[in-house]
Length: 342
Length: 258
Image 1 (tube, each protein chain N blue to C red):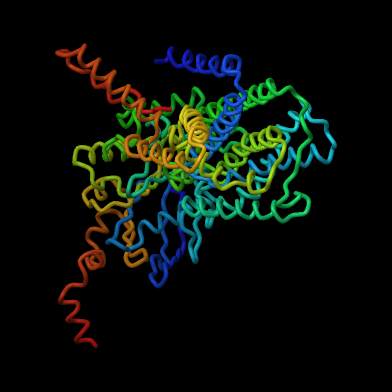
Image 2 (image 1 turned 60 degrees about the vertical axis):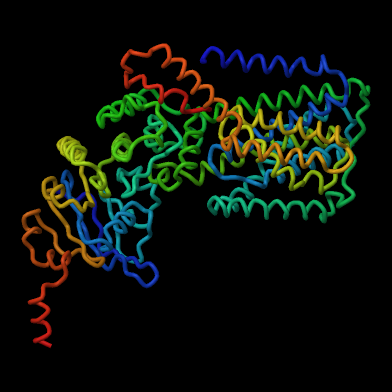
């Protein structure tokens, strides 16, 4: 297993790198871009909410702020559309982080369920601001400078920058999981008061996690704005975004590293595919709903956890079949294997 | 002996209920102090006040010369007061070893915690050493949620110990645990006490308390009723009254006096 894991990650990366070179149809590479952006957002969301157990339904705030940062700066600086705009992407992430500080300071004053409600409420505050404030251009939105790239290659730069963001988010999430800070978030998820009594500075840890997760989501928002060249407040501050990102993490495996990536991949591709295939009517929504029901029924902890459990059980059976007749050593009890799916 | 931990005239009400009504308690350095009393007499609330989980309405708490009244739990823990809970509280979805590592907090900056790995070599060694001490080292990689109740009690004790606190508050260490494990736990407490650790123990198991404690404080209706050696407490009529209610003769006496 230990050797197979890096190989699998490497293969997945290679597949993602060569995908747009093989599938050159712009419809598909365009789905690729938005899928990668969602994978990055779900991973980043999971880095805070999945580890700490504080489910945020306000990630749309950071997505929208990132998108507006990109749009407003490109517009006011009279930038020519093109590669230079990519430099605004990390800047948009930083702006999202700045916004996350007061948002987190307010929302994290309350626990768990109340936190969820507060994040939703704050999200709508931001949506209303974007619609009504004068500097955002209001409901008419903002047009970004036209990017003069050839149609057939238009998606490629976006695709690879988005892939870079996914890699960044994944590596960051893995580093956090290994750090003392990550351990503290997991302790908060399991029992916040107990963690506090063991010296964990819970308020600082929660706020740090919250602010960190805003960075990638802000970058994704900026990418969206640049990719579509036009933003409207109700589409970048979009309540469905909040829910979709959370659902992707739950679908794949809440609190795991691979889960949000897989959830983002499966859900976004399925959604786009269903939309394209059943363009008339809302049949695709029914199919998506059915998919969710199946996952909730049969894999309540997400795909990654369910599959790794199944895999370990199978491995255990094989092991016990091999060692039948030999007294089992309690120290190497198979029950200890693979308890941590992450 | 010097006083290490002291609560003075602590009061705390929850709505109309006076959980603590001017309760005082002192714990000498190097002692094992027992805290007993009927259900609802305020023992756990006093624990919560001392460890910062509950703010007192009045009174002060001091530890080793620091005034820790109203201090946050993490601060009090950092100063050297560790505790366990009556209903054991462990981190169920991380491994036993990671549970230990959570408790190996140093008073380090926020940025340091962000940038350093989960554990240093010395922290890992200390964690394994204490797991070994309570006999759980072979379960280190297991998810803590799969431990039995008794094992959880031991884990909770171990992760409080790994932080090397000066005084350890145990809330019913013998509650719901079989006799063998009770003896094991009391042996561990004695061994640690010999190494200089101070204990404050809330417990309903009288045999356990009388055997292990140097001094015992009895609480009743939010106040400290009697403090003394186990023998003094055992033979104090007020203690019996507190536990069993006032005897018939005394009631008769009171009635005739009235």
